[in-house]
Image (cartoon, rainbow, N blue to C red; front, side):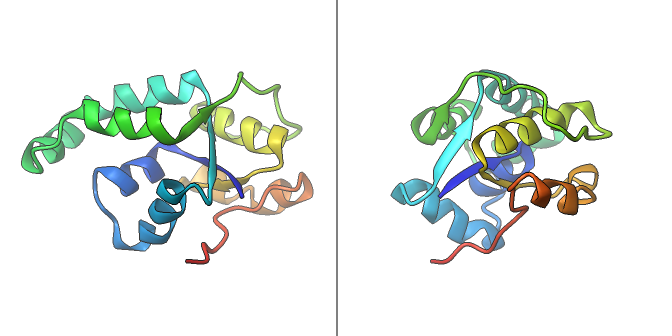
Length: 135
């Protein structure tokens, strides 16, 4: 299964250890999920890991940002930037995730309200938004 994970989902997987994300984390780490990403997505993750509230959480967990980036490097399959999708997101920071999911007809995992409101448009492009992960 091909999936695109936005930055907040990646944080849920390896920074917050969100219980609701456990099935997705297992799927990624077992290789059942083909996690598609771009260099720009990695750059965004690195930038977000330095935000004070995230850095505080990393420090509390004694987890270096490099470990989270290491998960990205180990499991994400880097792709070239995708062409602009038919539909535009109101938040330009989220567009790269949408573009990649549409280009590869991959599922998209996001909690961002600007992405969630695009569910029907994404479905028209063959992109499932936040599909259930079967363990």
